[in-house]
Length: 462
Length: 87
Image 1: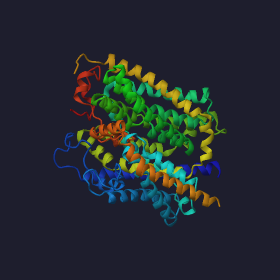
Image 2: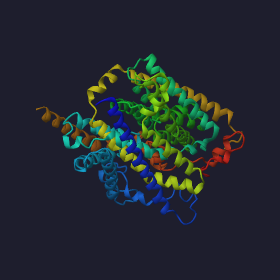
Image 3: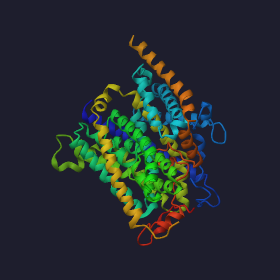
């Protein structure tokens, strides 16, 4: 395929992902608005996770189970959720079918494989829901990738399944929907100390570790350096997915970055709270340190809560501020990549803007638009904040999870173990992650101590 | 021949997963430190597997005790966050 033909294909796929993602967001907001509560619609106490949305009944995923696997198909009240799980798969098939149709494929060719992939996604959710796995943050992307890798590297991918493999499209659509969760307005939650801890250290660590990966460790793939640096410095898997899409990293590179992130998340989640308790650190400073360093949000809260509720709340909020950096970082990475790293050789020096625009991954614009529009709506008033929160927590966040999950199954199916081997054997991505994380730990501790422990500390003690 | 070999490996992996998820993990999670960690997370309603803050059981909202102990904005704009929770 020629470069221009490939470029046209990218644009078509990105545009389709943006369109479908934005249509889903509008649908979620419209349905949630239609079903808005008649009284006390602006009460956060009454609706802690936003207004309830009827769409929540159309999507769910297997729940935590201990030793009886069938527990997974019941909610906390004991009601069956088989229907919503099947409907969740249906949403993925619907999105995949729309993408296939817009891409020129026939539904007859897509549907058998699409349904099977959604089923494999369900298996990944089920494995991730086992209580022990769940309690140590071994998230669904790991199992989705593992399932795909296992099938793809043993029996191979049959032709009927191969025709439905559109993992990149599902992940891009998931990212556009994900934009609604990246609420810039939430940045103000922890005030200046939170902003300084999250926003000063994170870019420094991201840039320093990327630079060290390229120039000191001399890792041949710049996109691998970027994805590992982003997942380590920002917020784990979600940042890895967003930056990998922005710099068009290989599937193998994203898989490796996710594996590294999940492995070290478990270690840090277990090791950091006892160290903080042993050192006698203030829980507020300790919570901010956890929030700024541990990759995954759930693991941050778990580590914080094991120190105490105060540390848990601060850790969660610092992480939330860091979470909201994803949009800006994905945009910056996409501009840097299209303008400098991935620039075609024949481009004239004066055409940087045009070159960036020509090659810019369009779905990032959909992602940013969703983020800015929902941030604006969220900050319009307390009722609007509950409206956005309800649509997100009740529907779009769940659908985004399903799209990512099935997207990772597709990626696993298309990944060859042998292509992962050179990076694994060299050990350099591991060194990059460990070195970057050490820098992150030192800088975040210094900043958390400076801001939460001294500069912005009031004299009032509890 | 290759395909048969691959099918055997897939079947072996399936058996391993069944043994781990059906027998080993349920037993392992009853072991003291692991059981305590799981119980604490259950009690505090923490979704440890949350990839993003929107997947947490409770959205992280700024509590009142925090505002009393930390100077959020030097010029007194403490109330500007739109969704702060008062606990």
